[in-house]
Length: 435
Image 1: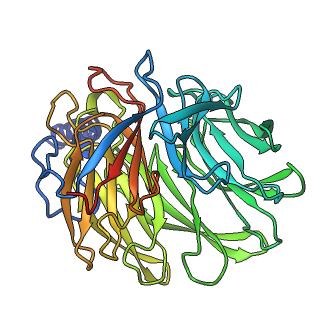
Image 2: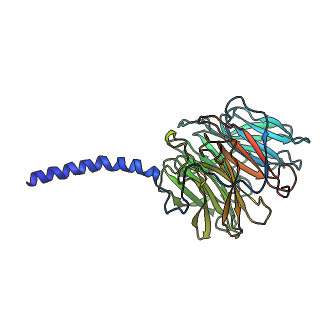
Image 3: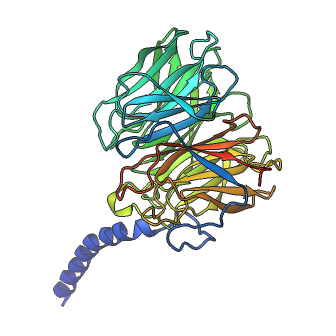
């Protein structure tokens, strides 16, 4: 009898060894992040039509193929006092610079050469010569790739154009670059998100003279998409944040200890490994004088999960001091990919703009662009601005027409059919006060 019982125990153990990983694999994508959500999800997100009016305008020429705009920003690139739009076009492998004409149309000027799938552009006076240069994070390939195709490229402003310099190569896919004086020596250093695929890193590059940088590894992890800098602890120097979204879904902070030394802190780990981290920006959302983090969740490029998921949305990680952050869920917008902050309605508090990539885009009524109206106490009412274009992965806010109201610019990355309601770079001008 003891022999039979022993065989049964071995058989049961064998079943558990096989069954538990399968059950875990099936169940994990359906789990929310740590903690529970108040909002109930019921398919594609649809919000009430915005009471704040916006006029939609396509910027530039219509592309012949479904567009791949990976990043947009509003910046006065030529420093003439008027806002321009800069966009990374991953399909044509170049930057597009848009300047507004007198009649309200936009002039498109291509910038840069040999930019294989640019992911992000950072505008900064890197060489301190009083003009604006452009740092470009080059993916090298829009699709999964673990080879050394990434680049950090500097487009140096020479007064009449841009000279191209490669600052870092021999790396895997690069998703983000930011600039700031990390070691306190008076020049600008860089943070770099080496996304890669199965392998990747978070780096900071120490400025050692004209276009010379020394590489320092802060974290070895694939899938980092954002590496913003901010003074999170209020001690007067720049710290680094990193949004890791591949094997693990994690938020990291690197406390600046001075003299190029950093202390690594894991501030949040998502229980759901397929939660789909898609973006992160620092912002003092509640106006209390410190930097919080706004994190979007909605990247489901895995084929089986391109539809919106119940855990998608926008999260506010409130800085409560001593490197502690309290998580708040602000929106359940399906497929949320990007967030921007501005006082859209002019009432003195910070509102949010959300862009969605995968919000049941095969329907005509689901939101692709929404804004969250702040009640002044970080309670947010959701408004739908538009349902087209779809597949919006990047968004920026700023006054593009000089009327004093913040407008919205977004970019579409159309990689999953059906290809409906296409758009490359699109602007929504804020008609606040013109109802």
